[in-house]
Length: 326
Image 1 (cartoon, rainbow, N blue to C red):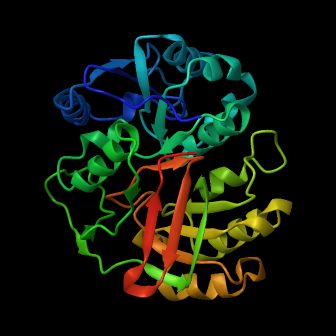
Image 2: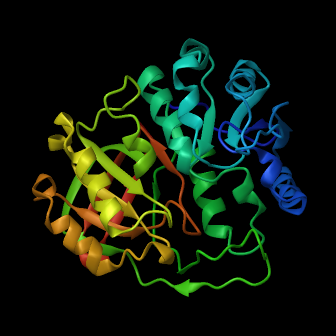
């Protein structure tokens, strides 16, 4: 079930189901609001987005209230998460999935929000979007690729391609918006060649793994699996987290694997990725592409969870096409 696409004049509600919006600088919030307003959207905020405790999150009840209010409000057409964090999985067994099913709308975020997106897709069939947080719209420089991909995903029915960005950055832009370092990007890393079609499933790897064995874990059957992790991951943790996912019974039916570009501090090199994938008998014979533009390195694409896509891993002719249909 693909939600109605956003159009100018639509209201977008910002909620904080993980870390509180209180940690986001006012200047960054201002840039984000202005950017969304310039696209014709009206931005509103859940009443508990600024609440926080000693873990810089709010109570389960407060976060649920904002999530449910956003989906229940007929004026709201899209929902953006404020930022990621660690604890959105606390909400899963309390969510009114029937409410979401009856009020489908665009829901976008990434990182820890993977838990909510996977659960919503599994329980309701609603396509959600692994893409920018509200806070991401506060990036002052180098946001064009992210914005174009977001608009392709949530405002357009046409297929779109996830192409390599000309450059990438993982500097702490939120600390200094003017002192940015961008690194030239020379295509994606083709680890295993091949072509495949399937349904996009994935997000943040360590968060997705939290759902194993629970009723919130989406099926990997015929999936184009896309996974990423941040600087807290390194080669050995990525290896074991990926292996854990591949132990699932339906992992044998994965059609392709896309790996988001790692942050430099993770120490996960191209050589490490090649070595890790080479050890996975479960992935033999399917296309594997790494250093793809999604996840914690900027800029990044918006990837719809639950839509059809096709992948061709073939050197300079590599393609990732999102069909924008189920």
